[in-house]
Image (cartoon, rainbow, N blue to C red; front, side, top):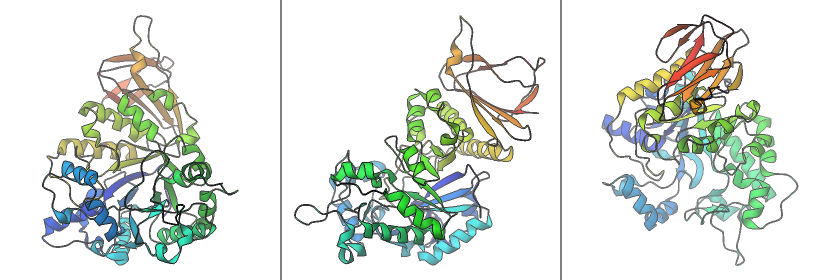
Length: 460
């Protein structure tokens, strides 16, 4: 099944999701037994792929380390005050083997899940953690040459250049030729079971970052071009998504990734600063970014932005170029982000009106082919005594057949007015159904929006 150029992805915490389905059914539900209604819930109209986060076999020693870590235990209880021992199942990024966990139905259950998604025209994304493995991963005993060792010959714990080491994992050596061969085989094994792979902390394996982190001289070739080049021989269609930070997005795109996280846009939407400047980047580069408002590592957007601001940000995310990532529970306005170690989340009041709004937004963008054709950032103009136009974010999409959409977002808590350099005659705001006619086709488009207001215009 081929991928769209700008896929819409829905992230689902596998352990939490299956746990809730199991409690509702009164029996254990695995990936191979998920009812049709549950698949329907996580594949609303407009979703092209589901990322089942955390399906792999987790580590028992890693679980023991997590349970013995005071800071982690405190975070567990903060998110889940009625924490029970069985709620902690270890980190999905402390991978013992790239085999689907038995409690999730094993590889057979995953194959059934993939088939269910494919029947709905939806692709499957899985995780790959290239930087480290669990302390009981088979490689630890069988292939010590795959790992970074300290001066005493002991295994180093996994880390990045800026933070303390993670307590539950051991560090792989990105410069080891043997590890690169094994990584290619691992990535190919994952690709055989899905349609796309999200690579955790992908920038840590680049020559630049790995050399800085571990003080080792870099080889001539970078990790990712070598590994991805090997993968492409057998799996040319697999979409690779890099979790990327520290302005490494462009480098990772050049090294073979289809898409890279756009953490900068997330930060700017949360702060309300520098958004327009960020969107001045080359459209070809932006088309290979992943736009998001939350994921398993970021706070729930409902806990960060006021409701109206969160909706305005969602309209922006849904209509910009690039891949789009939505997080299960985001639509319903959940405010608690459980640590990935947990298999249960707290009960929260769900905002069903908000969920309906999100689903309608995704469907509108999909059904009206909003993100097709040429994307262009628009600059609104004001008047000498009214520069509220600076609060407006605006862009247009123009398809080859002439179809045109214009998006305008007042990303502020104050009213804003402005003139946009677009020529529209008859157009409809898809968000509220209002139809407008502009008498002079050659005049700029006047817009006036209340705080956090949005337009999604479709030209007739």
